[in-house]
Structures are given as structure tokens and as C-alpha cells.
Image 1 (tube, rainbow, N blue to C red):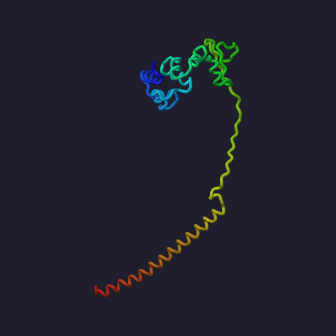
Image 2: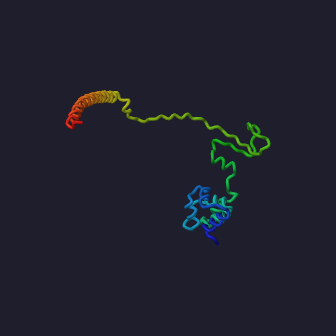
Length: 192
């Protein structure tokens, strides 16, 4: 008799699925499928084995037994013990959907030719108010004292730049007259 991993691997390859694709269909990691096929582990839930059997087209009961579940777990999931459509829908959203196979004649909007009638019941609307309670320190731009300090610094910076420019102009003017005197004396010495 083949092991659970061997059965899954053979059925997966026959179905033309990769480990990654099978894992995606089951909502698991590819490493989990790899671990099952190598015999290092098996599924921990019968529902996972049931989904796996449905995807790979295998017998559910045999696969459950191969995975290490008791035969009673396989019997519990037989067709006779599965919930009806109404029961399954009721577990999904019991307050939002009303389903009946043969509804009363007064059901609004029911189509006569269909034996299944579905009516969606609007849930009550509850107003939700979300308040943001976050205390944030004001930005430095919003504090008046800081703004005044930046204005003072800007004024003093501009004043210093103006003084430095004037000093540079004065120095260049003085040096150019000194330079021209030095140049003239150099030329006189060289007698050019």
C-alpha cells in the first residue's frame, strides 16, 4: 500500500500540478506539500485532506486513512453527514441570508420557475464614529517665539553679508591702486 506522500505526489503529477500550484490551491506553503510528499509530515486537519482529495480527484476516505486519521473521521465526512446548502449558507452569514427550497408564495421578487429562492436581508446600519486622539507637538513653524528667532537670525546674516561685501570692495579698490604702483615700479626697474 502506498504512503500518503507517495499517493499525493503521484496524483499531483498526474493532474499536471506543481507543488507550488497545489500549495496555492490549498492555501499553504510549497514547503508543506514537499514535506508531505517526502513523508516527513502529514496534514493535521481532516478538512485539509478533504480539500486535497477534491483537488486531486482521490478517494477521500482512503486519503484520510493514509494521512493517519481514524476511519471514523472519514465516515463523518461522507455525503450523508455533510450539511445541506441551507445549513452551509446559514453558518456563513445567518443574519444576512435567508434560503429555502420551497419558499412561501408571498416572497417578494421570487421567480416562479426556480425551486430555490434566496432573499438577502439588509443588516441594520450602525453609525460608527472614529475619533483620532493623538497629541502631537506643534511644528517649529507654528511656534511664534521660534519664528521670531529665525527672523532675527536672518536679519543679522544679511547685515553681516552686506558688511563683508563692502569690506571686500574697499580692499580690492585699495589693493588695485597699490598693485598698479607696484607694477609701475617693477617696470621701471626692468627698464622696459
